[in-house]
Image 1: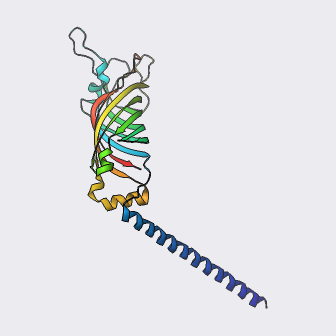
Image 2: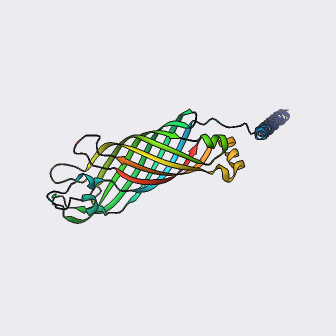
Length: 268
């Protein structure tokens, strides 16, 4: 008898499990069919568009902090150029990300953006005596810029006629953290009690152009929006000027530059 009860109990559990699997399967099929029907209706009248409230940028570009710009020639003598002497006269890679909140859409979009970057360069370290002589050790300077921006994108013709070029402009404030390490990876000192670490305030302005890639495959771009909520994908080119010299504060390391960036933009 116990064996019969056990078999009947097992049979009921298997039946319930089969029913549950069938119910879940039917629900998934129905949900998929409903989604496909909605997608067909949307694609039929081309009315679908997910809300657009944000933008994300990943930018790369050459950068050379204007550390030497604060030193002037005295009595015709060549100015002191610590950055060039220790790190060279070339440019190195700056990587930046930016996240925008687009709060206004009318004849373009207006957004508030928060940016974060990273820059590092390695050269020959000076000796700690403060004489300016070079040692046999390596020195590294790191800069982590943080900025707030007001961003305007003139995307009116993109939204109304599908024109893929979108000019834009930015202006904002900067706070750049910097540090200089010696050959042992420690914060460098100047031999007089000072250390090579701090932050500098400043401002920036830029203008650029977006090439919106939706026209390359409109159906794929539409599906990208339908499935993931990404309204536009674009390649950006921007020319910028930054004055990172302290906003009037004295004895601040100058970190500004005038250069360009190339990047990838997602609006969603």
